[in-house]
Image 1 (tube, helix red, strand yellow):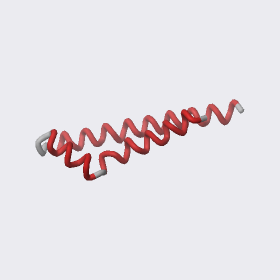
Image 2 (image 1 turned 90 degrees about the vertical axis):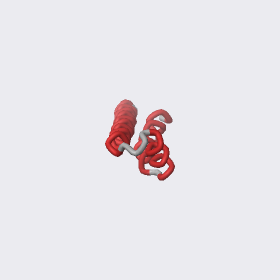
Image 3 (image 1 turned 90 degrees about the horizontal axis):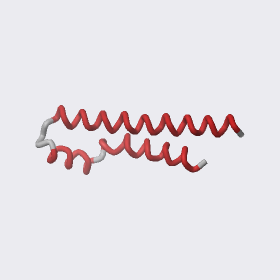
Length: 67
């Protein structure tokens, strides 16, 4: 039961990460101000977080149905 909750929490954390000021300044420095690359990285994080959330929901559904 802890694994689906972990996946949901990790997914939310990964989706929120690109919105933080620290992340934005680090990516700005890493990509030397290339806004397109920064936006691509933020979208990648969003999709990865969404995948974690969907996996967590699938495990919760499986847990609820099997019980």
